[in-house]
Length: 217
Image 1 (cartoon, helix red, strand yellow):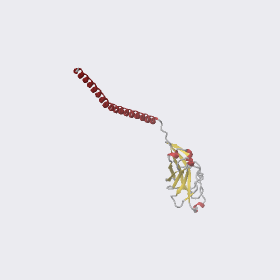
Image 2 (cartoon, helix red, strand yellow):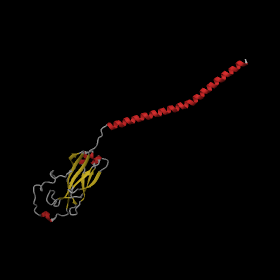
Image 3 (cartoon, helix red, strand yellow):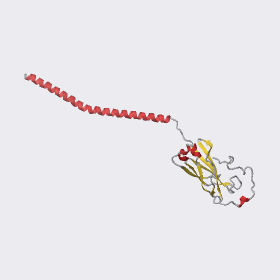
Image 4 (tube, rainbow, N blue to C red):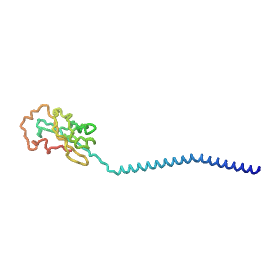
């Protein structure tokens, strides 16, 4: 009897020890498995995110880019010595005169555009418009030119602008050139030479509003 009881106790003890070991192993392995699963999920998420970003950037790069063409406003400033608004031998271009181009677009752009420029030796000024203004032909045609300062004290009275707004003159290498026409400064008083009998030719009598004498872009 004693021998059987001893075997019974030994068997129960062995089972208890086995169960305890299994529980211990499970309690140790469970956190490890959870950590491994978490790492796998993080790696999988990073891989999916990277793939999505790559696909998005590739599709964006493959789409054609639309560029707004550049626009330049040009015009000519001269001294109308004898107040005749026509080409005569007494008139001359004004290099170094200051003008300003202003474009507001009747509220169709976020803010009014204004930029000053000086004329070259032929009296021609060039102003490159902002991309926002360049994108609208209607806005460009509503631009105005203001005479700021003459380069000659003798001919420094700004005349009122007679231009109807810039019109498209040419297209060159993606740049649209708009001509604003002619603008004049005058003397405060007509000089005596204006009362002399002018010796004119057909070219000198041409109207300033014609296309024959236009500013070069």
